[in-house]
Image (cartoon, rainbow, N blue to C red):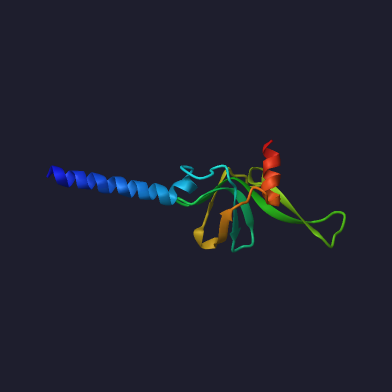
Length: 122
């Protein structure tokens, strides 16, 4: 009986270790929790923020990428990052429907948006 309990304990520990390995990075238990991610939705909207994928897709400290006409040249577009906290429907956490996510990924720190966000932090 005691031997059986030992094996059950070992099994539980293995399951916990595997779960932390699979989900830990996106829950802030490993990896770079300060890294920003980009999320592209089926609606064409692009969001940038701190993404967690477990237990659901949620974006914190988010921004929406908006396209605007360049005031100097109306034939050209410029891009703006609008903080979600400043939107008319302001929120500090955006829960996303997985069915509407086309792709997502970690934003490179040396990308244009990555550099802009690093500047804003300073």
